[in-house]
Length: 176
Image 1 (cartoon, rainbow, N blue to C red):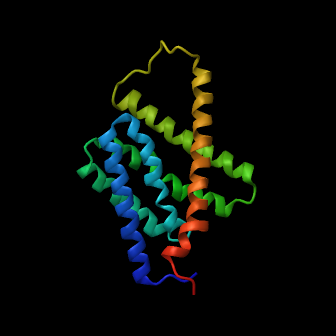
Image 2: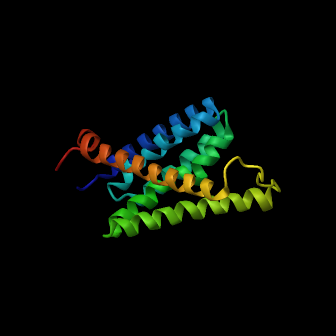
């Protein structure tokens, strides 16, 4: 499908607006509102499904920076920038360029794990915050729970991508 320049601008503005609304809503609810960031990041499928990765990256950065400026909870906007916002770009790229679904899932799990490890390194070494040692469950179980969470996160993103491509796309972009 060929998208005109004005349609690209319209889609970019729409995605930024949606992402900002959900980043702001996430900031209003505090820690439980972080689940809303999943919805915020799913707006990027409007651009990635059309192959507009550069514009999707621009909207991700723009919404994240604007979210830091306007959100009542700055950490929710930082969480959007650090993890939630760029995952749809990576997911769409991997899914469209990898034929083997198991390999694609392993690549996406490695990607999520790399970002979590980076965040832990920042917390431990840069912020000097020690990890808790008195967890009620073994560390291995925590890792398995995190992996299950990443898998569910990917399934929810797949559902959002399907919803856009099958139900919403035809209403936003006219067929040529």
